Image (cartoon, rainbow, N blue to C red):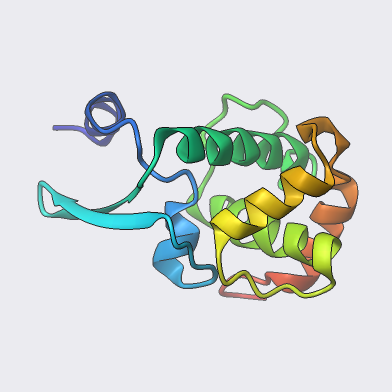
Length: 144
């Protein structure tokens, strides 16, 4: 089975896949609402509640859109290389934490999402330019 077909089947059969799974697997963040499961010799990270997964998916989409210029991908539908996705996930969450609290350590993505949405009730209120700038300071990737 090719990877694209596997991804489509996976997303259709497991709607609670965590949009920040790469960040969680890497250990750059943690989340109390994340659970692990195995499928076809792969480990997956899933969310415990649909409403929380949807909230994180919206935040991931907003981060991806706002990181577009910084990672030189200007179309939201364009595939993103792993390293750039890590920059969006690890850097974006750490940058959001830094802008919100002045500390880049993300001990719980769920708590960060709750706090961010309490402080900025509408997704559009989040100062994404500051988040992207902070992300650059707090996530260097393998080579930086």
